[in-house]
Amino acid sequence: MKLILLLVFFSLHTCFTLEIGQSKIGGPTGPINRCVGPHTLPGAACRAMIKRYTFDPKKGCVEFTFGGCKPAPNNFETLAECRKACIAR
Image 1 (cartoon, helix red, strand yellow):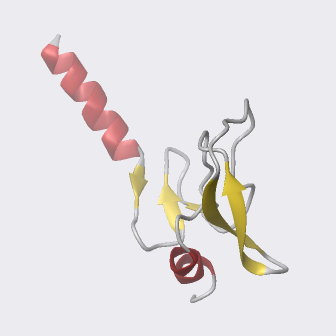
Image 2 (cartoon, rainbow, N blue to C red; image 1 turned 60 degrees about the vertical axis):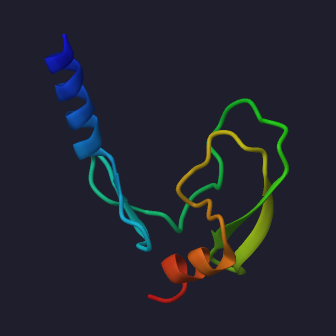
Image 3 (tube, rainbow, N blue to C red; image 1 turned 90 degrees about the vertical axis):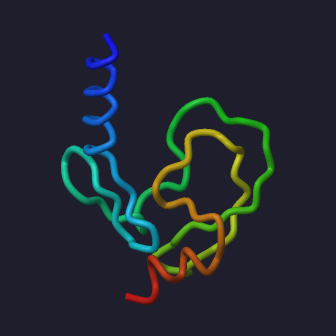
Protein backbone atom coordinates (compact mmCIF):
# COMPACT_ATOMS: atom_id res chain seq x y z
CA MET A 1 0.00 0.00 0.00
CA LYS A 2 2.84 2.40 0.86
CA LEU A 3 4.46 1.67 -2.49
CA ILE A 4 1.25 2.50 -4.35
CA LEU A 5 0.88 5.79 -2.47
CA LEU A 6 4.51 6.64 -3.16
CA LEU A 7 4.06 5.93 -6.88
CA VAL A 8 0.88 8.04 -7.03
CA PHE A 9 2.61 10.93 -5.25
CA PHE A 10 5.64 10.71 -7.53
CA SER A 11 3.42 10.63 -10.63
CA LEU A 12 1.43 13.68 -9.52
CA HIS A 13 4.58 15.53 -8.53
CA THR A 14 6.13 14.81 -11.92
CA CYS A 15 3.04 15.87 -13.89
CA PHE A 16 2.45 19.18 -12.12
CA THR A 17 5.47 21.43 -11.71
CA LEU A 18 5.59 25.13 -11.11
CA GLU A 19 8.62 26.97 -12.43
CA ILE A 20 9.10 29.76 -9.93
CA GLY A 21 9.71 33.12 -11.59
CA GLN A 22 8.66 31.86 -14.99
CA SER A 23 5.53 32.67 -16.95
CA LYS A 24 4.65 29.06 -17.68
CA ILE A 25 3.34 26.18 -15.59
CA GLY A 26 3.93 22.62 -16.71
CA GLY A 27 1.01 20.22 -16.61
CA PRO A 28 -0.15 16.98 -18.18
CA THR A 29 -0.90 18.68 -21.51
CA GLY A 30 2.24 20.81 -21.67
CA PRO A 31 3.09 24.34 -20.61
CA ILE A 32 0.40 27.00 -20.33
CA ASN A 33 0.89 30.74 -20.20
CA ARG A 34 0.28 32.18 -16.72
CA CYS A 35 -0.47 35.60 -18.19
CA VAL A 36 -3.74 34.77 -19.94
CA GLY A 37 -7.14 33.75 -18.65
CA PRO A 38 -9.08 34.55 -15.50
CA HIS A 39 -7.48 35.08 -12.09
CA THR A 40 -9.85 32.63 -10.36
CA LEU A 41 -11.43 29.38 -11.46
CA PRO A 42 -15.21 28.93 -11.68
CA GLY A 43 -17.03 27.80 -8.57
CA ALA A 44 -18.25 29.08 -5.24
CA ALA A 45 -16.60 32.29 -4.11
CA CYS A 46 -14.85 32.48 -0.76
CA ARG A 47 -15.07 35.50 1.51
CA ALA A 48 -11.45 36.43 2.08
CA MET A 49 -10.24 39.81 0.89
CA ILE A 50 -6.67 39.28 -0.27
CA LYS A 51 -4.87 41.83 -2.43
CA ARG A 52 -3.52 40.08 -5.54
CA TYR A 53 -2.47 40.97 -9.08
CA THR A 54 -3.55 39.67 -12.47
CA PHE A 55 -2.29 40.42 -15.97
CA ASP A 56 -4.67 42.22 -18.31
CA PRO A 57 -3.37 42.44 -21.90
CA LYS A 58 -4.75 45.99 -22.28
CA LYS A 59 -3.86 47.40 -18.84
CA GLY A 60 -0.83 45.35 -17.74
CA CYS A 61 -0.63 44.05 -14.18
CA VAL A 62 -3.65 45.20 -12.19
CA GLU A 63 -4.71 44.74 -8.58
CA PHE A 64 -7.83 42.77 -7.66
CA THR A 65 -9.36 41.38 -4.48
CA PHE A 66 -9.00 37.61 -4.30
CA GLY A 67 -11.60 35.66 -2.35
CA GLY A 68 -9.12 32.98 -1.28
CA CYS A 69 -10.40 29.94 -3.22
CA LYS A 70 -9.57 28.37 -6.55
CA PRO A 71 -6.75 30.58 -7.83
CA ALA A 72 -6.00 30.29 -11.53
CA PRO A 73 -2.46 30.61 -12.91
CA ASN A 74 -3.06 34.32 -13.73
CA ASN A 75 -3.12 35.16 -10.00
CA PHE A 76 0.06 36.68 -8.56
CA GLU A 77 0.86 37.51 -4.93
CA THR A 78 2.89 40.60 -5.77
CA LEU A 79 3.03 43.25 -8.47
CA ALA A 80 6.71 42.42 -9.00
CA GLU A 81 5.88 38.74 -9.59
CA CYS A 82 3.23 39.68 -12.17
CA ARG A 83 5.57 42.07 -13.96
CA LYS A 84 8.43 39.58 -13.98
CA ALA A 85 6.26 36.83 -15.44
CA CYS A 86 4.18 38.83 -17.89
CA ILE A 87 5.87 42.10 -18.83
CA ALA A 88 9.61 41.56 -18.63
CA ARG A 89 9.82 39.02 -21.45
